[in-house]
Amino acid sequence: MDVIAWLKEGDPSLGPLVERHLLDKQTPPTTKGIIGRYLELFDEEASLWGEGIYSPKWISTHYTMMELAYMEIDPMHPTYQKAMRKLWQRLWRDRVERKGRDLDLCIVGMLTGLLAYGKAEEELLGNLVEHILGLSFPDGGWNCEWSHKTKRPQKSSLHTTISVLEGLHRYLAEGYIHHAGGVAKAMSAGEEFILAKRLFRAERTDETIHPEMVGWHYPPRWRYDIFRALEHFAARKRPFDSRMEEALGILIDSLDDHGRAPRGPQYPGRIHFRLEKTAKGRFNTLRALKILKCYHRELFTRLTGIETSGAKNISRDGGRTWKRSSPN
Image (cartoon, rainbow, N blue to C red):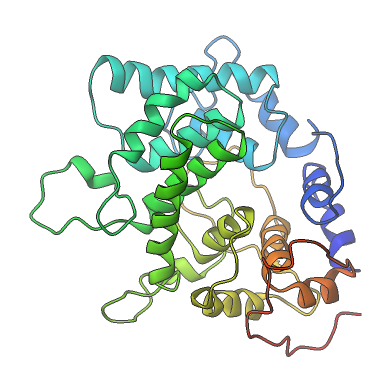
């Protein structure tokens, strides 16, 4: 079975994602499959999932909405809209604006993305974006410990930086204009922070920063990995950079002959239900193919049979050759 058919045989929530991102088709959102199951678990009276805002992980409102947004639920769905406003109120308005408490920047970044995806009014997003822009570190990225008193040098975190970059990208992609120039500039600096590490290597020692950063996980939650970074770069249509090459090679080498990626281990925590039970992961395979479509078109076409076109300056082979036999 070819990889596109295999993806479509999975949960119904995957079908529209495959058609939009791999087949370039305009497909309406769905409420079937995993999306529908999440919607059924929503507590209408409390406007919450999992009886909490950010915790318990991973059944809280925040992390359930992260999954729904990635699966591209209709952003105007009443449940998403209701939960979005509850999340903004409890995480930002009540905590930060009213009580002046700190909020980890990774959460601010994710919240920005969730609000932008839900097409929230610009005034709800403006303070979050200004907050992010004012807290970038000299190395170009961000760190959740921005307000903590520490004797250590202020250095950015890959985990925090990718969450902020994804949120800011969604902000621009949805057409918000407040501080748009500053957002674009900050994003370029944050992406350079990741590229300077070749996506996963410590600059001083050249060692892998953490083994989990080169392994597949879905959902990634708040954690960074090279596939999350590559997916962000592809979504941004950022031109190929030679510093991506090693990470792209790791991605390619992780695929089987049919182009399927591992499901990978789950991060510990409570879950509503298991998303996948097979050794190969459909969500991770979708992520891999989205990346290959941008940065290794020859391999993408070989695996999917789909010819790509347009934006020729964006993608490039990446210097890698597919060494396994072509899938049957």
